[in-house]
Amino acid sequence: MNNLKKELNEMTREISSTKAIAEEMNLKFKQVTQEPETITNDASKLNEKLEATEKVKEELEIEMKKHRVQTEQ
Image (cartoon, rainbow, N blue to C red):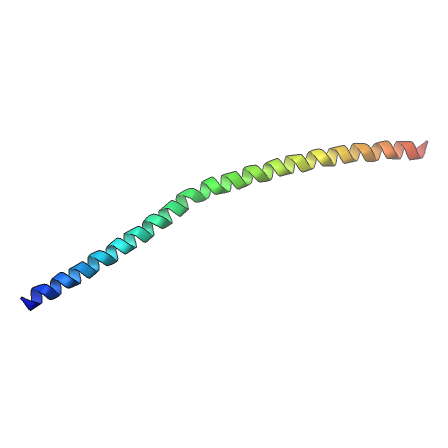
């Protein structure tokens, strides 16, 4: 009888441990599946900033050309 109780307690600990591992793996899986979405969003934001920066650069270059022409006259 004592032996059965020991086995039952051991099995209960193993089940609890397995459940904890499964929960941890589930959390890691969720993180891994969300990472590509986060990376895609970050890349999109960076592309938008790059495009805005390039536009400002072009505008500044036009202004600089205008000032050069004015100073040359």
